Image 1: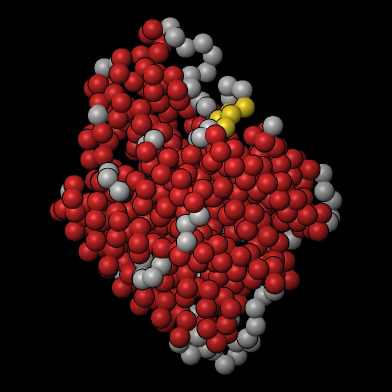
Image 2: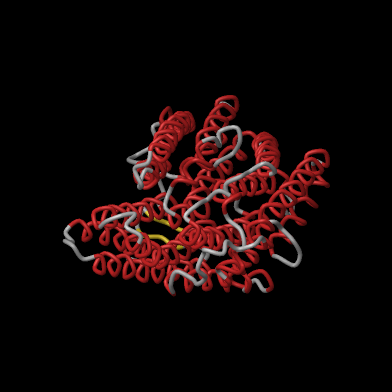
Length: 482
């Protein structure tokens, strides 16, 4: 029942929003009510996984430790983004940037986006997961073009085309993995993850390698791994800020979930070395590309987007290195989702105040926005891996594992991560501590843009110093079952 509730809460809010006429408040409360329901359902499913190890509903939906982590990330960040959206969109209405029709479109697509992400991780079918992830492309393409500016339309088309081509490659790889089951006639109805795992050793190892290469390329496009990352900075910088937080903090992890599921099948078919080496290659490439572009970045929303590419690369390295790497990578996934949401929320408040995302037009944020500026600074400390942040500890664990297994790759990636921190610091310092324009009034946009940001930051800080036992057990189980 909880799995159905998880899906129907955002879907119901989207459908109900279709019939709302001229009442922004009704649209807001439908979305907020849905957020409370799916957060409760996700917590119930996670509790069941902690207690029993797995949770399921018939043959269609199931949750193990990895799924539990993902649905809680989606639910927590999604709920925070829902609350933040109400304050952010109200401020844009006040500035006459958007009207009621745009707000209605936003809440419909926002809830559909969350629904298909939940579906992607709880389904037992690789094909339905593919359909759901393709659904995220369709729903968010319209959100990226939300403001109807030429640059936003270009970013939306770029996002749509690149991701659709990438996911077609992922579909081809998925079908290649189906070959042993189709030949044996063991598939009755939809092929499930368990069926793929059981048949992994019966097929041609070469076909399994080719299949995973297609899958890594396809889902890696959605995950933002270089060199398939080119859609990501444009999409993140043009979408409404709450959507950017979901794209960066949640959607990239959902795509990584797909890679990890197929990695488990590939490991059984050909051994771990093949997939590990590919993850190390793409992970290192992503970190290096992000490092050099961040160093010259002049747009703070794009800066956060390239930071996401860096962190996706570090997570890929964690799983490629093995040892303590997978546990640290999953913990970093949680930290990154929370930290990037905090950073995008605070960046949204900066955008509302300064009406620009250009770094050379934004100065003195701490003076103009004391709360948002301070939160942005704390978020930077976390995301850059500066001690004593939790990401500092996860990156130490990942690179320690790398030194033991692939020292050259680990050292190269570590150098790139340091370069990212230096480039990030240079930009953040100028944003926060420069002189505020005299004509710019001080003050935050409103409590609805502050409270979600503070709430997520509080969770992030708590987890940075103390990992609850149930969460630790979930991560350990997910890392062991990779």
